[in-house]
Length: 293
Image (cartoon, rainbow, N blue to C red; front, side, top):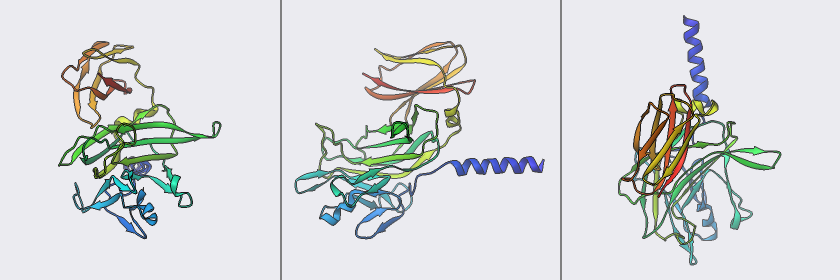
Protein backbone atom coordinates (compact mmCIF):
# COMPACT_ATOMS: atom_id res chain seq x y z
CA UNK A 1 0.00 0.00 0.00
CA UNK A 2 2.86 2.37 0.84
CA UNK A 3 4.47 1.68 -2.56
CA UNK A 4 1.20 2.48 -4.33
CA UNK A 5 0.84 5.73 -2.38
CA UNK A 6 4.45 6.68 -3.19
CA UNK A 7 3.94 5.91 -6.89
CA UNK A 8 0.76 8.01 -6.96
CA UNK A 9 2.60 10.89 -5.28
CA UNK A 10 5.47 10.72 -7.78
CA UNK A 11 3.08 10.64 -10.72
CA UNK A 12 1.23 13.68 -9.38
CA UNK A 13 4.53 15.54 -8.94
CA UNK A 14 5.52 14.68 -12.51
CA UNK A 15 2.18 15.98 -13.78
CA UNK A 16 2.56 19.25 -11.86
CA UNK A 17 6.11 19.75 -13.09
CA UNK A 18 4.95 19.19 -16.68
CA UNK A 19 2.49 22.05 -16.36
CA UNK A 20 4.57 24.93 -17.66
CA UNK A 21 3.51 28.25 -16.17
CA UNK A 22 3.75 31.82 -17.36
CA UNK A 23 6.76 33.76 -16.10
CA UNK A 24 5.90 36.41 -13.51
CA UNK A 25 2.16 36.18 -14.28
CA UNK A 26 1.34 38.40 -11.30
CA UNK A 27 3.73 41.10 -12.61
CA UNK A 28 5.21 41.52 -9.14
CA UNK A 29 8.84 41.54 -10.32
CA UNK A 30 10.34 44.32 -12.47
CA UNK A 31 13.90 45.08 -13.49
CA UNK A 32 15.29 48.50 -14.43
CA UNK A 33 18.36 48.89 -16.64
CA UNK A 34 18.18 51.69 -19.18
CA UNK A 35 14.43 50.98 -19.18
CA UNK A 36 11.98 49.07 -16.96
CA UNK A 37 10.37 45.74 -17.88
CA UNK A 38 8.41 43.07 -16.00
CA UNK A 39 10.70 40.08 -15.42
CA UNK A 40 10.26 37.43 -18.11
CA UNK A 41 8.45 39.79 -20.50
CA UNK A 42 9.39 42.28 -23.21
CA UNK A 43 7.77 45.66 -23.91
CA UNK A 44 8.28 48.62 -26.21
CA UNK A 45 9.92 50.45 -23.32
CA UNK A 46 13.17 49.47 -24.99
CA UNK A 47 12.44 52.25 -27.51
CA UNK A 48 13.07 54.80 -24.74
CA UNK A 49 16.70 54.72 -25.88
CA UNK A 50 15.44 56.51 -29.00
CA UNK A 51 13.54 59.05 -26.92
CA UNK A 52 10.14 57.32 -27.05
CA UNK A 53 7.98 57.46 -23.90
CA UNK A 54 7.43 54.28 -21.89
CA UNK A 55 4.31 52.25 -22.67
CA UNK A 56 4.39 49.72 -19.79
CA UNK A 57 4.59 50.40 -16.07
CA UNK A 58 4.23 48.60 -12.73
CA UNK A 59 0.99 49.80 -11.14
CA UNK A 60 0.16 49.71 -7.44
CA UNK A 61 -3.51 49.40 -8.49
CA UNK A 62 -3.22 45.61 -8.31
CA UNK A 63 -5.82 42.88 -8.01
CA UNK A 64 -3.51 41.07 -5.61
CA UNK A 65 0.03 41.60 -4.35
CA UNK A 66 1.85 44.88 -4.82
CA UNK A 67 1.99 45.33 -8.60
CA UNK A 68 -0.03 44.88 -11.77
CA UNK A 69 0.93 45.50 -15.39
CA UNK A 70 -0.25 48.80 -16.89
CA UNK A 71 0.11 49.34 -20.62
CA UNK A 72 -0.80 52.69 -22.14
CA UNK A 73 -1.09 54.12 -25.67
CA UNK A 74 1.29 57.06 -26.16
CA UNK A 75 2.33 59.51 -28.85
CA UNK A 76 5.85 59.86 -30.25
CA UNK A 77 6.43 62.58 -32.85
CA UNK A 78 2.78 62.38 -33.86
CA UNK A 79 2.78 58.56 -34.14
CA UNK A 80 0.52 56.51 -31.90
CA UNK A 81 2.37 53.73 -30.09
CA UNK A 82 0.13 51.16 -28.34
CA UNK A 83 1.06 49.81 -24.95
CA UNK A 84 2.55 46.42 -25.83
CA UNK A 85 3.78 43.64 -23.55
CA UNK A 86 4.65 40.21 -24.92
CA UNK A 87 6.57 37.00 -24.41
CA UNK A 88 9.57 37.28 -26.66
CA UNK A 89 12.63 39.35 -27.43
CA UNK A 90 13.54 42.63 -29.11
CA UNK A 91 16.24 42.93 -31.76
CA UNK A 92 18.05 46.15 -30.86
CA UNK A 93 20.00 46.06 -34.14
CA UNK A 94 16.72 46.58 -36.03
CA UNK A 95 14.56 48.81 -33.80
CA UNK A 96 11.99 49.55 -36.54
CA UNK A 97 11.15 45.83 -36.80
CA UNK A 98 12.66 44.49 -33.64
CA UNK A 99 9.76 42.64 -31.98
CA UNK A 100 10.38 38.88 -31.98
CA UNK A 101 7.36 37.07 -30.60
CA UNK A 102 7.39 33.75 -28.79
CA UNK A 103 9.30 31.79 -26.15
CA UNK A 104 10.05 28.08 -25.69
CA UNK A 105 7.13 26.25 -24.11
CA UNK A 106 5.88 22.70 -23.56
CA UNK A 107 2.44 21.91 -22.19
CA UNK A 108 -1.25 21.73 -23.03
CA UNK A 109 -3.11 24.31 -20.91
CA UNK A 110 -6.89 24.43 -21.07
CA UNK A 111 -7.59 28.08 -20.23
CA UNK A 112 -5.95 31.46 -19.85
CA UNK A 113 -7.22 33.22 -16.72
CA UNK A 114 -6.64 36.62 -15.17
CA UNK A 115 -8.08 40.00 -14.24
CA UNK A 116 -8.21 43.25 -16.18
CA UNK A 117 -9.25 46.89 -15.98
CA UNK A 118 -9.74 48.82 -19.19
CA UNK A 119 -9.94 52.60 -19.47
CA UNK A 120 -10.19 53.54 -23.17
CA UNK A 121 -9.81 57.16 -24.17
CA UNK A 122 -12.89 57.43 -26.38
CA UNK A 123 -13.51 54.55 -28.79
CA UNK A 124 -10.69 52.01 -28.59
CA UNK A 125 -10.11 48.27 -28.41
CA UNK A 126 -7.41 46.54 -26.42
CA UNK A 127 -6.85 42.84 -26.12
CA UNK A 128 -4.95 39.69 -25.22
CA UNK A 129 -3.98 36.97 -27.67
CA UNK A 130 -2.22 33.66 -27.16
CA UNK A 131 -0.93 31.06 -29.59
CA UNK A 132 0.85 27.76 -28.99
CA UNK A 133 3.24 26.96 -31.84
CA UNK A 134 5.30 24.04 -33.07
CA UNK A 135 8.01 24.36 -35.70
CA UNK A 136 7.27 22.49 -38.92
CA UNK A 137 10.63 21.55 -40.51
CA UNK A 138 8.97 20.44 -43.76
CA UNK A 139 7.34 23.82 -44.34
CA UNK A 140 10.07 25.74 -42.47
CA UNK A 141 7.50 27.63 -40.40
CA UNK A 142 5.69 27.52 -37.08
CA UNK A 143 2.29 25.81 -37.06
CA UNK A 144 -0.38 27.09 -34.65
CA UNK A 145 -1.44 24.24 -32.33
CA UNK A 146 -3.91 26.23 -30.22
CA UNK A 147 -5.05 29.83 -29.91
CA UNK A 148 -7.33 32.24 -28.06
CA UNK A 149 -8.17 35.94 -28.28
CA UNK A 150 -9.84 38.37 -25.88
CA UNK A 151 -10.65 41.67 -27.59
CA UNK A 152 -14.11 42.60 -26.29
CA UNK A 153 -12.76 44.51 -23.31
CA UNK A 154 -15.33 46.68 -21.58
CA UNK A 155 -14.43 49.93 -19.84
CA UNK A 156 -14.50 49.32 -16.09
CA UNK A 157 -13.20 50.78 -12.86
CA UNK A 158 -12.90 47.46 -10.99
CA UNK A 159 -11.05 44.31 -11.93
CA UNK A 160 -12.94 41.89 -14.17
CA UNK A 161 -12.15 38.17 -14.17
CA UNK A 162 -11.73 36.31 -17.45
CA UNK A 163 -11.31 32.62 -18.27
CA UNK A 164 -10.76 31.93 -21.96
CA UNK A 165 -10.53 28.39 -23.39
CA UNK A 166 -7.76 27.51 -25.81
CA UNK A 167 -8.96 26.00 -29.08
CA UNK A 168 -6.73 23.10 -30.12
CA UNK A 169 -6.60 22.17 -33.79
CA UNK A 170 -3.75 19.63 -33.61
CA UNK A 171 -3.11 16.88 -31.07
CA UNK A 172 0.63 17.46 -30.77
CA UNK A 173 2.75 19.09 -28.09
CA UNK A 174 3.76 22.72 -28.81
CA UNK A 175 7.35 23.90 -28.54
CA UNK A 176 6.72 27.64 -28.08
CA UNK A 177 4.17 30.14 -26.83
CA UNK A 178 3.19 33.59 -28.06
CA UNK A 179 1.25 35.83 -25.66
CA UNK A 180 0.58 39.49 -26.47
CA UNK A 181 -1.09 42.19 -24.37
CA UNK A 182 -1.95 45.44 -26.15
CA UNK A 183 -3.80 48.58 -25.00
CA UNK A 184 -5.09 49.69 -28.42
CA UNK A 185 -6.07 48.21 -31.75
CA UNK A 186 -3.92 48.84 -34.81
CA UNK A 187 -6.68 47.94 -37.28
CA UNK A 188 -8.58 50.72 -39.11
CA UNK A 189 -10.78 52.48 -38.27
CA UNK A 190 -9.71 51.88 -34.65
CA UNK A 191 -6.05 52.86 -34.71
CA UNK A 192 -5.73 53.60 -31.02
CA UNK A 193 -6.30 56.60 -28.82
CA UNK A 194 -3.51 58.26 -26.85
CA UNK A 195 -4.13 57.83 -23.12
CA UNK A 196 -5.95 54.48 -23.32
CA UNK A 197 -4.90 52.29 -20.38
CA UNK A 198 -5.13 48.53 -19.78
CA UNK A 199 -4.26 46.90 -16.45
CA UNK A 200 -3.59 43.15 -16.22
CA UNK A 201 -2.95 41.09 -13.09
CA UNK A 202 -2.78 37.46 -11.94
CA UNK A 203 -2.39 36.13 -15.46
CA UNK A 204 -2.15 32.31 -15.44
CA UNK A 205 -2.48 29.18 -17.54
CA UNK A 206 -5.01 26.72 -16.17
CA UNK A 207 -4.48 22.96 -16.43
CA UNK A 208 -7.83 21.50 -15.48
CA UNK A 209 -8.77 17.80 -15.75
CA UNK A 210 -10.94 18.72 -18.74
CA UNK A 211 -7.78 19.59 -20.63
CA UNK A 212 -6.43 16.05 -20.29
CA UNK A 213 -8.81 14.96 -23.06
CA UNK A 214 -7.02 17.21 -25.54
CA UNK A 215 -5.14 14.12 -26.72
CA UNK A 216 -8.21 11.82 -26.73
CA UNK A 217 -10.77 11.39 -29.49
CA UNK A 218 -12.89 14.55 -29.83
CA UNK A 219 -16.63 14.51 -29.36
CA UNK A 220 -18.32 14.35 -32.78
CA UNK A 221 -21.06 16.94 -33.14
CA UNK A 222 -22.49 19.60 -35.41
CA UNK A 223 -22.80 23.01 -33.75
CA UNK A 224 -24.13 25.97 -35.73
CA UNK A 225 -25.29 29.50 -34.92
CA UNK A 226 -28.53 30.50 -36.60
CA UNK A 227 -31.35 32.96 -36.19
CA UNK A 228 -32.44 32.99 -32.55
CA UNK A 229 -30.03 30.44 -31.20
CA UNK A 230 -27.46 27.66 -31.50
CA UNK A 231 -28.34 24.20 -32.82
CA UNK A 232 -26.42 21.17 -31.52
CA UNK A 233 -26.62 17.73 -33.12
CA UNK A 234 -24.69 14.75 -31.73
CA UNK A 235 -23.52 11.82 -33.84
CA UNK A 236 -24.68 9.39 -31.11
CA UNK A 237 -27.00 9.54 -28.11
CA UNK A 238 -24.71 9.83 -25.09
CA UNK A 239 -25.50 12.07 -22.07
CA UNK A 240 -23.66 15.26 -23.00
CA UNK A 241 -23.08 18.48 -21.06
CA UNK A 242 -23.05 21.76 -22.93
CA UNK A 243 -21.74 25.14 -21.79
CA UNK A 244 -21.96 28.43 -23.68
CA UNK A 245 -19.47 31.11 -22.59
CA UNK A 246 -18.80 34.72 -23.49
CA UNK A 247 -15.24 35.77 -24.30
CA UNK A 248 -14.72 36.98 -20.72
CA UNK A 249 -15.40 33.44 -19.47
CA UNK A 250 -18.93 34.14 -18.20
CA UNK A 251 -21.22 31.11 -18.57
CA UNK A 252 -24.42 32.32 -20.28
CA UNK A 253 -26.09 28.93 -20.82
CA UNK A 254 -25.49 25.36 -19.68
CA UNK A 255 -27.25 22.05 -19.29
CA UNK A 256 -27.31 18.35 -20.19
CA UNK A 257 -28.53 16.83 -23.45
CA UNK A 258 -30.42 13.55 -23.09
CA UNK A 259 -31.29 13.40 -26.82
CA UNK A 260 -29.01 13.91 -29.79
CA UNK A 261 -30.46 17.32 -30.67
CA UNK A 262 -30.72 20.55 -28.68
CA UNK A 263 -31.38 24.23 -29.35
CA UNK A 264 -29.92 26.99 -27.14
CA UNK A 265 -32.04 30.15 -27.16
CA UNK A 266 -29.81 33.23 -27.59
CA UNK A 267 -32.22 36.06 -28.43
CA UNK A 268 -31.45 37.65 -25.03
CA UNK A 269 -27.69 37.73 -25.66
CA UNK A 270 -25.75 40.56 -27.36
CA UNK A 271 -24.09 39.82 -30.66
CA UNK A 272 -20.46 38.76 -30.64
CA UNK A 273 -18.15 35.79 -30.26
CA UNK A 274 -19.08 32.90 -27.95
CA UNK A 275 -17.57 29.51 -27.13
CA UNK A 276 -19.65 26.34 -26.90
CA UNK A 277 -18.03 23.45 -25.04
CA UNK A 278 -19.37 19.90 -25.06
CA UNK A 279 -18.29 16.92 -22.95
CA UNK A 280 -19.99 13.55 -22.60
CA UNK A 281 -20.11 10.50 -20.34
CA UNK A 282 -17.31 8.88 -22.37
CA UNK A 283 -14.88 11.63 -21.42
CA UNK A 284 -14.86 13.11 -24.93
CA UNK A 285 -15.05 16.86 -25.48
CA UNK A 286 -15.07 19.49 -28.20
CA UNK A 287 -15.05 23.29 -28.29
CA UNK A 288 -16.63 25.54 -30.93
CA UNK A 289 -16.19 29.24 -31.63
CA UNK A 290 -19.42 30.90 -32.79
CA UNK A 291 -20.48 34.35 -33.93
CA UNK A 292 -23.96 35.43 -32.81
CA UNK A 293 -25.51 38.15 -35.01
